[in-house]
Image: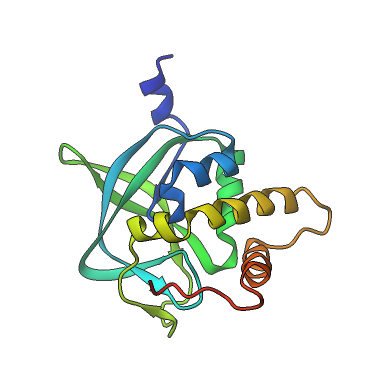
Length: 175
């Protein structure tokens, strides 16, 4: 089976934040799956106070640019579910790919639609410059942690990593 056909098999996930970085995905899945640019209409990507990663929620007449990861196996989807933790729920959404093609995919949507910590617009390019290096390290710690019998959640790993790195202060998403 050709690689293009294989990429269409398996799970498809729209990513719009830290998972747009191949470096982060590679730490989680030990590979960077085939992907394509995509737009998720009628959603907005928010910054989150005290976090370096974003949240999306349905908002009419807004759109979120991101990527679709193709050909994910069920165990890889479970890793992403664990990584996204309790802050997100996996939903089926419709994205637009280049050349006017629409596709049903999974996306991780912020659970708390009334979260007072959501604000503004999250910027991937700014995140890459300011936060990607530390986020890749935190993700590696998370992958080591989930191998332990009494492993911490991703949220707990995130908080302990950034509290230790910043001398007890959590980073702000505002840049």
